[in-house]
Image 1 (cartoon, rainbow, N blue to C red):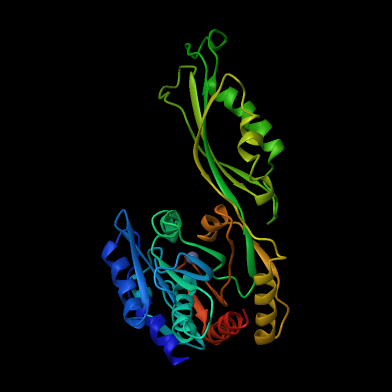
Image 2: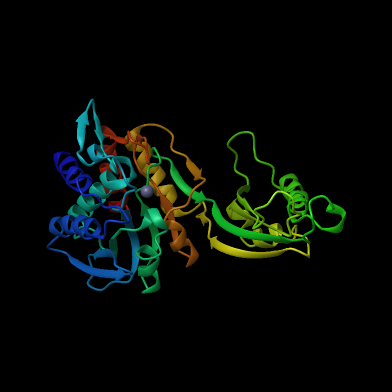
Length: 354
Ligand SMILES: [Zn+2]
């Protein structure tokens, strides 16, 4: 247990944020030192480093791949000074997800020569900004696995699905005229409002948390800067979060509502995350977790995605699974020390039972 806490604290002390490239290299050095006797491959894309440890030299196709991101979102200065208090470890990344990374590193160290299948440990440094230069890059280089476990915070729920993202810019064109003679023009803003009303009927904002596709109108603008003019253009940007079931159709479902006279541009499409709860690995993980924490464990969904979605894209199963804590991405982030101990035991039992 002391090892987990010590290693977690070492990792938390490093300001490994996206804009501090040195921090990303430094935080990986700590892992390298801890696992110096094992085979490791180094990857780098756009000055973003990542590592892959394995029990078989140059392995690409793993049975189980443990994944952890060692980057964090920016925190207050004092959050980089880890603090132990009342059974909790506080600090930036305590919950998301340096302490689980520490567990993964130490479990790997203990078990890597005890399991008889290809086991990998992937440490990445850009999950918080999309994972394109670490996890996705490694996948492009041929890394895959039957089952991926990313140690994101889930309170021991097994997170097997997460929403995907589409960002769409929509442009309405009109005809300008003097504001005192609006019948001579065509107001692009009013045209846009009519469209937004139709959109809201199809995708109403749920009154409370629900597992449905949501559409957020995040930006609206026109180039018109004067008051006495009918605007001839209006742009909106939509932030669509879709459920995995709608993956194939989401772009068509939204764009089919756009009037023919409008233009649009897909700015981003990110896949959803999905692994069936019938996966044998999920069943096994559920059994081992229940034995250790002595309560029912469920599969859960998340509204935001993780690096697991990149693996799902190439047909690998994967989940996020992590211990108890709170305050991720806030000034008061912590993880329960007892639950870290449980987490370590669960991963150990799970990996040995395969
Ligand atoms: Zn995270």
